[in-house]
Image 1 (cartoon, rainbow, N blue to C red):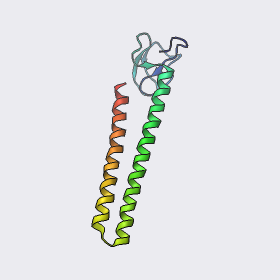
Image 2 (image 1 turned 30 degrees about the vertical axis):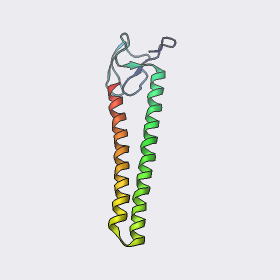
Image 3 (image 1 turned 120 degrees about the horizontal axis):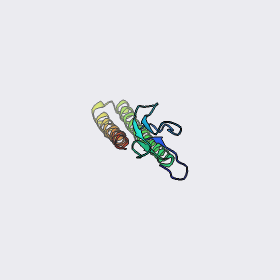
Image 4 (image 1 turned 90 degrees about the horizontal axis):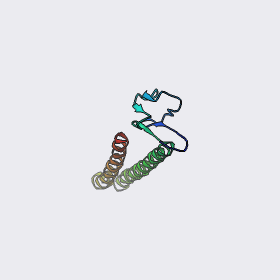
Amino acid sequence: MDAADGSAYCVQCGYDLLGSSPQGRCPECGQAFDRRTGKGVVSGTAVAQQRGDLVLTWAKVGVISAIGLACLGGGIYGALRSGDWSRSMVIGGGIALALFAVAGLIWWNDALERKRL
């Protein structure tokens, strides 16, 4: 918690616990907290950092997914132009699948990281 302003936010959802009982469960998500020991609470700075990290993760996932869709579209376009579906679709689809897998792993890693906090 911040010593300067005494702020306390739920570690799970970021709900402002100021004014609530010293210990209990978050009214928003049900996460157990104890403001006296600091269990289940974070400072306002930490909440802002978590939100910033979440925005950055979704930006990465969005950009990688968009590139994957572009590769898939390129494979479809190449297949339509050449009349040979196998080569263009295998290359474009393979690259798109790999990029979607990377985006999914980034999202999954972020979700696991947030669970650990």
